Structures are given as structure tokens and as C-alpha cells.
Image (cartoon, rainbow over all chains, first blue to last red; front, side, top):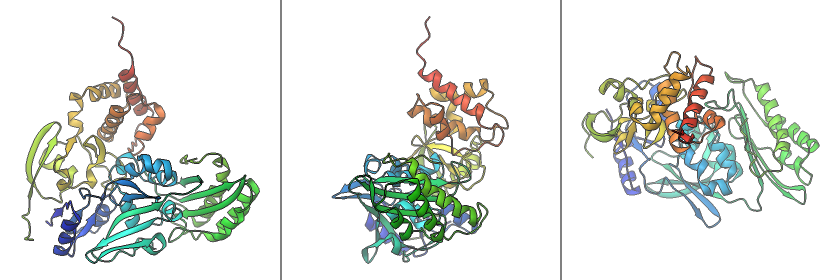
Length: 287
Length: 166
């Protein structure tokens, strides 16, 4: 039986990673342990992150919110700083699994699993999260685009660890909205999801950021759909036009949960539904 | 770093009592409870964190014992369904589940009750919608949930009702 280790400091962590090069880092373990058990082999050495100093806190640093990668999704969804500044991320975090799972699963874990259906990923793309990666050679910082390299794949190198997620606070109080469609409300993987960040000026859209989850190998953006909203009031006509471009941008597959065709339609509908949430800064009803 | 022995010592609180034992660090908590400690109230449903049957409380928070390893328990306070009848809120839950006919095959009930226990300790005023959301990670294939929700709502009402006049 291989060891399960719980470092408390970066120094301990790096020396354990060096002593056990075949070790896996474990945050909440909710994806990792399922994946490892499917292989039906003995567990590799595990380096648990739940007791690490400086990986389980949420702080404001200047104009950024900095989140330790081992923060649980429950902590991310309920912390006063994220609730005030990043409701989009809170809604995404609160959509993963169910309450007990969210007490275990972490934001860093959702990122490192890099599932196309990861519920926090669209929000993190839109919010332009910066990811601090730690290894023996030091710290490097990647954008979401650089970090997620494909379905289930990240830019993490062997022995490298996602340490913190840093998110610039959106300025001028934009509308932040995340909505997910799954086969049931809880404990369901997204069929499609949309994160939207829209800033209005004098009744017209001055900035629109849109990102779809679960409808492509990675999170899908559409500059055409965003452009279709710009300079117009947020009304049915402009959302319909943007939805036309959204249907062209998404690249869904058919699988056990839904057909590609259905996912395309849902992607468009999620965008058109923004009209229901335009007057609130945190429309956040889960569908 | 030398190779550690097959088993490692761990110490934690189980249902209020301190416990030290030697166990393989990668053993799942659900197996530790059911097979090493003969606490078979905790059930394993899916084994992949999708059904909530194996829910127990760790430092008061509902967690899934099929996705936890023994080594993670070090220093934690664990509560399983076996402690329910000794808990003031848990005792009321047991009565409500019986009175409202919330138990059919019973397999999901330990997970339901432990999740409800954590919810009502924190929010004794929880309404039906809060309870629906609170129990949304616990699957039941028999009841259709209505009677389970009735039972937890009944407990919440009992917890917040003013003392009856003598």
C-alpha cells in the first residue's frame, strides 16, 4: 500500500513530490479517486492538499480575488468576496454535483480535471482567471487558454501543481450570469452551459463576454455572437441574432446525455434566456 | 524518505469518542467503517460520489465516505448514522421519518438523515425549498422524495415551534 501524505508547507510538498516522482496530487479527490479506482490497480502515492497552508483561503489582493486551489466549491460559492465580486463563479461552483460533493471537490480540482463539462470553467474563461503553477523550479502563471489544452488535458508538467487562481475584479458592475442545463438539477453533468458577462451603458451593451461549456472540446467563445450584442439594448432581436452565431460557433458531440443537435439548440436558448436576467446582476437561477 | 509500513496509525473522533487505530492509509472510509469497525449503517450505493448513500459528517459537514481515504480522517470529528439517536436533532429526524412513512427500502436513508442533520443544525428554520436543495445530492429510487421532504420539513417545524403551553 502506497503512502497518503499531507504536507502543510510548500517546502514539505516539494520534497514529497521529489521523493515520490510517481505520486499524484489530490485536492478533494472526487474525480481523482474515481478515475484511479476505474483502473483497478493499487493507488499510487498520493499527496493530499487539504492541509496545505495558503491553498485553502480566499483573499483580495489589490484589484484581484485570489483563491487557493484547494478551496472547496462550497467555500468558493459562499465566500463574501466571491459573492460580492464574482457571482458568475459562485453560480458555476454551486452547479457542480450536490452539497456533500461540494464540501469535498475543489476549484483547483475542477480546473485540473479539465472536463469540457466542468461547471466553473466558462466563468473562469470569461473572468480572465490567471493560474499560478508551482514546482521545484518556481512559479509560473498561465491564462485559462494556455492552461486547458484539450478535453481532460492541461499544461501542467510532471511534478507541477496548480497553486492559486487569481481573478481580476470586473469593473463597472456588469451583469454576471451562469446557467446550466443537465438531465436533472443536481448531480448531473452539464448538457450545455452558458456564462455571460455583460456591461450596459445607458441602456446599450458596452461589453459582452460569452462562453459555453459542454458543447466542444474546450470552452467555446464566439466573437461574432458577442459583436452582435454590442451597442444595442439587450432585447429579443439582438439576442436572437447572437444566438444564430452561437449555433455556428459551438461544436458539440452526441453522447449518452444528449445529441449534438439538441446541444446546439440549448446553446442558443441559453443565450436568448439572458433577457430574463438583464435586470439583475446575479440572475443565477439554476435551470 | 523510507517506505512507510503497510498500515499507518490514525486518530480521530468517531461519534463523539476518540479512536486510534492502525489502517492502510488508502483504505476507503466506507470500508473502514463497515468492515473494520462493523458500523454497517453507512451504505455504499454507487461508489463514485453520485448517489449520497454513504454520506457522513466530517467536522459537521456532509461528505461522501466512498471518496474519502482513511488517512484523511486524522484529527477529524466523524459522525455516522449510528450516532443519530443520541443527537437532539437526529432523534427528532428519526421520529419524523417514521411518522411520515419516509422509509421504504431504506438504503438511502442513512445518507438522507445525515445530510438533513447537518442542514437542520445550521438552518433549523429551513423551508421546503431549502430542504430540496439540501438533499439534492441524495438519490432515492423508492419514495419519489415527497415523504422524505415531508419528514425533514416536519423535523424543522418541531425544532422551531414555540414550546407548547402546559
